[in-house]
Length: 464
Image (tube, rainbow, N blue to C red):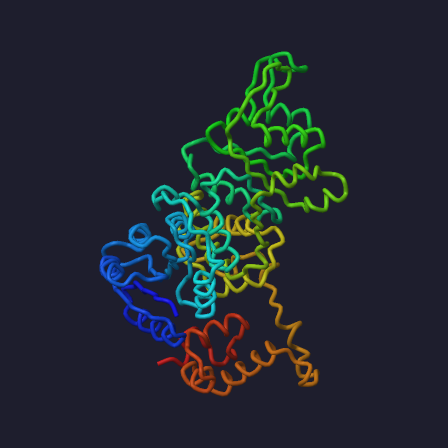
C-alpha cells in the first residue's frame, strides 16, 4: 500500500481516481489546487503525486518543482486534457516521471503507478529549467502512445550532451525531432546547423562540413568555414548519415571522439563543442553487417536512438497533424481554412501515406491553395485519397461462412443493421447497442457507414 495524492480542480475526476486506487488498497487523498496539495503533503507526505497541468491559480507545471522540493524522491504523474508536445517536454524537464492524457486510460495509469512505485522506477535525477514560452516554437504534435514516449525522451535527453541517432522513413519528421532537442537543450540560443549528407559528393561534403583554406582545391578562391565551425555553441544535425563514405566516417568518428577536425588544406587542428545529432532512413545495423558502415561509428552515433514510426502506424495522430499543418499553411498562403469536414478526415485516415508527414503537408498545401471559403471538404482532396476500402472488404461477407468473419466485420455489420432498423435514429441505436452517442459517431466514421439516400440523413438525423 502506498500513499497517493491527487491534485486536480475537477472534483469528479479526483473522486473517480480516488475510488479506483483505494480499491487497490492505496491510501489516497485529494486536493483541488496546487496550494491545497502542498499544504496537505506537508502533513501527510505522499509517495506518488498525480498532478493536473491546467488549474486555476498555480498551474501544475508551476507546482511541480515545489512538490519536488518539499518531498525529495516524490514520484509525479502529470495529467492533462491537452495534447501538446511543449507541455510534455516541460513536465519531464521539471521532474515528472510520467505523463498521461485525459480521458485517463486506467490500465495505462495502473501500469505507470506500478512502475514508479517499484524499485525499478524512473530516474529521479532529471534536469528542469525550461518554460513553455521558450519551447513554444516546437511544432511536433501527436497523441499516440509512441509519440508521447518520443516527447518524453526528448525532454529527458535534451539537457544531456549524449549523441542522438534519429531513425525513420523519409518524411516522418526527423529534423523536427532534432530541432526540438536543440530548442529544449542548454543552448537554445545557439545555432542549429543542418547538413544533408546525401546531397553532396564526398569532396564537397568534406569541405562543407569541415571547411577549407584558400587554394585547398581548384575553385577554393577564399577560405571558408565549415558547418562544424558554424555550429559552435549549438547543434549540428547530420541528415542521411548512412550515405557518407568510409573516409568521411573515419573523420566523423574523430570529431565524436576528440571534438576536433582539420579543414581541407589546413595544418592546424580545429575544435568544436557542437552537439551532434544524426538521422537516417536506412538500416545502419544492416550496413554495419554488410561492411558498408563502421561499427565503432555506429555505436558512437546511437548513444540514444529515437525511432519515428511511419504515419500509417500512428493514424491516431493524423487529426492533430492536420490541424497543426493547416495552421501553418494558412499563415504561409495567407488563407483562413478554419474547418475540415469529417468525411475529408476519413479520406485522410484511410490513406496509408507512403510519403508520411511530408506527403500529408504537400497534399494539404495544394488543397488549401485551390480551395474557396473556410472549410476543407472531401471533394477538394485528390481522388486517390478517397477510395474506400470497405467495398472490397465487405461485399463478399454474405458469401463467407460466419466462422470466417473477423470481429471487425461482425461489429460493422451489427451496427449497420441496428442503424437501419432504427431508421438511423442515433438515440434509439445507442439504446440498443448500449453505447454513448460520441462512441456511435466514432464508429460510424470508422466504418464509413452512410444512411440510405431516401433518409437524406446528416449528422443530426434522428436526434432530438
